[in-house]
Length: 399
Image 1 (tube, one colour):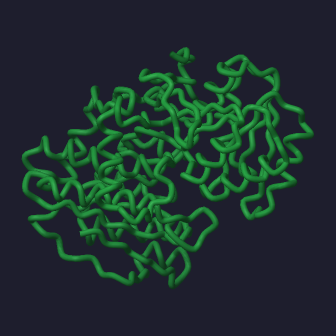
Image 2 (cartoon, one colour):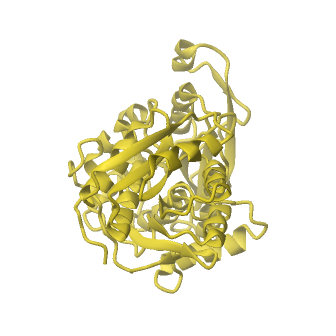
């Protein structure tokens, strides 16, 4: 059932707004035995594009359907590739709403016009994984995780664990949400001296970046650059230059190669985990690992620990659980169900109140819902240090 839309912009934005966009695959007619959800993501043709989020959504879709679907109906995750072009979001959202008749948007984010189209159609965005105002201000965005939240959780955990006087945070140039959240996390942990090292997105040689980090003489360092392969390359440059000070990360951009590299290096480290990555403690994580083994045995998903990848899997998986509670699953019934959820629960997340309208962080008011688990990397894997999540935003101590 999993289908991908490879869109091509044929005219200027005005033409896009008028619907002058073609897709390689035309939308199927709405089927009464199918429940469709729409996933919009930059899967190709851009420096920040990669396939894993859509592949993880496909894994969850297959598992849902093999387990009976949603009240006897098949789940169809309709993926629309924006090719990294914001204008394509408008085309994709309109097509998903008007032609595919999706009952919800899944994962991705609410930016570049998706929120406006969703609001007009009354379509919820379930578990958006962005960091823009469109995500946090949209009352139809049911937020379980935000990329930039990981920056704060990671620095807060690292600040409490290593008690540094000075820290360096590496981020893409101009990536204000991540930078400000990273500083907030350190500040809430009592670290005021935080130097930011900004990386142009087109960078391929990270040795000069590590040289800047070393020149700052921090007590800890870390950061976030995208895609996961780029973070691995940054850390490899650090190992090559024998940078041995403690490493502070969150797992919102992390692949297996990152974990192995940090483990092999033996560098002291701290990792904030958006979800509990321990199948013995958390049944939902065990379900995720079991599904990867069954539906992705060849290992196409290279970043099973990346926060966006796991969130997109969880978005599809939990959508099915919530939709099964409804007699008739439509955009209207799912919207009314989710916008009144005060006790959404899954063992790999803190309990969520989706009715929260504001919170402790001005740039992301719904971050009151966002928590993380303390962890670190050793022995070639991520280790969950405690089964109780913490919050950088509410200054909840590490358990």
